[in-house]
Length: 367
Ligand code: FES
Ligand SMILES: [Fe+2]
Image (cartoon, rainbow, N blue to C red; front, side, top):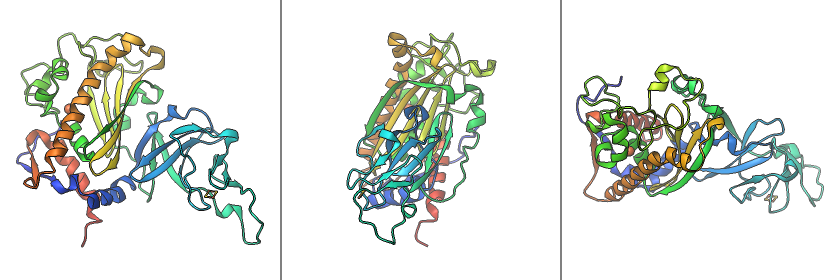
């Protein structure tokens, strides 16, 4: 159980949520050096399938090589720097990555294999020009990339916590992509506290009844309100389930209707016994993010039609409420009168997140 804060803690400076220079420092220190969730493995099921993701200003190609392994490359040709993939997704014909400018071609492992019409010179060696690789790892069906450095792939307690849920077996039943006009840290802080739940999320509070009480997320033991609505089986608008719980769950997992989990900086999971609502967030500027919301189900129990809506309505509503509030907060943070906020006791996870941001940036602050 997490402990509430004993005293107020200073929030991050307001300028860090709007300043272009600070945003670029965060890209370098946080977004390009950490393992960043970039998508679901199921989005590139076959060798040669590809899609582009943008981490800050960096376009990255995710693909599968001929052995079926996931690979990632910077989306830039080694000849003179053209983009290679100019659309969002597709399949490489004949398993060749062909530059649209002068036609240099690479295989799915990134080796340069053809340079059409180039006049031979003695100093040219194709092996000098492979694509720039990006490190990849997979967990739970998510693909992670790391652009720079050697940071280990360490997800902390996440894999053990959801081992029984076998997230890698789940498939997407619904996806919503949203452009939200707010700094990425506001979304992370918003996910880290439920003090805002009573005023902002009436639907969520009807099923997670404990949230009616001062947003007491993580502070179990002294609430007078039961944790969930009586008879609730999962997080839907009325708390009813229409598909069975995940096959691997034990009794405790089945009775734990909701576990939120944030893997900073950009993967947020809302885990229920029979589905997961995942948020994958990537910054598009100092005051904007793109969020991919996925609803994940066991393929053999994938709900359809009205049953699918039954499962998506609660988080669709709740996520839109959060996005709207973060946009209002971003607008408020433009005020020259506001220098920095505070975290109150229940916002202990915001404080932890802020500490993580500060320590990530510390090395880059002027000495
Ligand atoms: S820039 Fe790609 S082939 Fe010339
Ligand atoms: Fe919220």
